[in-house]
Every structure is written in structure tokens, then in C-alpha cells.
Image 1: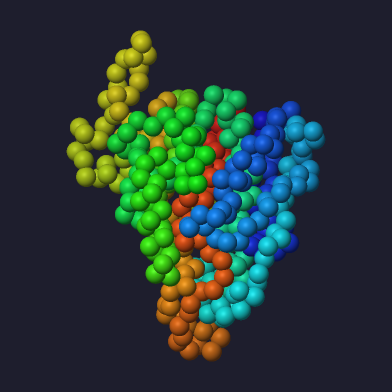
Image 2 (image 1 turned 30 degrees about the vertical axis):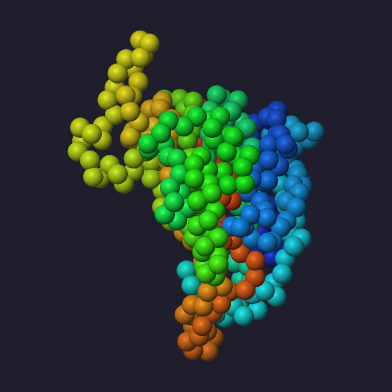
Length: 351
């Protein structure tokens, strides 16, 4: 098999956004229903945390798929942007939104892109196309995964760190407007409160991979953790990734942090899973668990300090337009997609 490669292109206010995927084996089934379901979960809604900008996200398969079957050639899938309003950004073409990519893109590219350009969360739509394809192919290998909201602001939901979580439980949560396993009402109130104050709020997403075989990955920069983190950090707004107990391990002694090895039904297995299913960059057969931190949406209506980068004068900025009060619920599908892509790539490298 050829190595899998995923390339995303386009921008928030360009005519199309899309993805090209190479290395998908000839004869692989490409299920449009699964792709559309992933896009539905990522899409805007009437929920209090979501942007009012709604796109149909109708996928156009340009090449590489005939009658739902991969041809072995390059797969190209695109989505047309139909609901753009670049006029909403007329007041920020030289004034960067704090903590957005505006400031650095001005110095790197000489301009601030409307709607965030290629730095926009809009680009997670084609990511979800690739993620849905990889997730479907992983399932055929006996590997399944799911992500969910584990916290919003200071409101904690259910977490793999304290509870045993099943795939069925996660999939059931995906049918809810807020894909969390606990405290959905309190999380929603946290977003409503922030929005009422012209502000935004962040949170965390957890992802669990079930059925992972032993031996996928390698040492140093070829490790599985690095591969997953690489893809996950491509999701706009991600500012932290930890595996298993993550930062909590730094507070433990080795005797508490270690996962004891025991025999179960005559086979070695781990007594606990504090390492998150990975040792030395290689999967150990336990579920892979990771927690991802997402920052609050930078684009807020609350007045903030900035500088006009053309006149070099200090100014105030209040962001207009259509933005998420909390990106965390919609990021669940994007995180899940990023993890699926990383694992499918690593599996492909082994063969």
C-alpha cells in the first residue's frame, strides 16, 4: 500500500474548500452517508454556541471515486462556500483581532484575510471528509473511535480519567446538540452566560480509540503520540493535547503512574491505562485515550485593545460578523477526524 496523504485547500470566503487524499486502496468503499453524518456533526446549528453562518456542505467528489468505490487514484472532494459575507470584516482589514491569526498573517502575507482565510475553522469541513473516510476504513480493521465534549469552561463532564466509557455511550451522545456525556445543561448555560457578556468560552474534547492492535508506531519523532498530535494541532483553536493521565502523571510517583502488567484469559494486558494506550511511541493494545484543550473563540463582540497595522495607531476593536460563542461542540467531529487520519496513516505505514 502507498502512504496516505491528506491535503486541505481553500479559504473561508473563497468559492470552494476541498481535500485531496492519496493512498486509499482501490476497491475501498466510500460511504457518503458517513461523510455527511460527520459534516452534520461539525456543522452550524441553532444552538447558543454556534455561528449563525450556515452552509449546506454538499460534497462534490471530483475524482477518485466511482459509484461509491475508490479507484485507487487521487480522491478530490470539494464543498462550495455559498453563505459568505466579507463585508462583516471591513473594520478589521488592517486591525488584527487579538489572538487570531490576523496579526501574524499580516506580517507573513502582507494582509489580513477576510473571515480568517485559510486559518478559519471553515477548513475543518474538508478535514471531516477525510476523517470520515479514514474512520470508515479503520472500522473494517476492527478499530473504532469516538470523541465527545469533556468540559466547557469550568463545567466538567464525564471523562475517561474517572469513568469507563463505551463506544455506544459516545455514539449516543453524537445524536444530541451538545455531544457530552454529563452536565449538558450546565455547559449550555456557561456558553449563554459568556455570549450575554459579548464574550466566548473554551473547553476540552476527549477521544477514545478502541480495538487498537499492539505495535503501531515507533520511537522518537516516528511515534504514534506525535503523529496524532500533529493532526490534532491542525484543528484551529487547539492549544493542548495530553494522552492518558497526561499532565497528571507529573504529580505522581512511578509506582502510581505505571500501568501494571497482568494476565487476563492467559494473555498479558495492562491493569490500568494511565499511559493512554501508548508506550515508547507504540500502541500497547489498550484503548488510546487523549484529551484536547480548545481556546475560547478569539472573535468576540466585547471591545478589546488592538493596533491599526497600517497607520500604527492604537485602537479598539469589537468584532462583527457571525462567530461561535464556543467552538468546542463543533470541534468534536474535527478532533475525531484528525485522530482517525493519524491512525489510518500509521496503520498504512506498517504494511
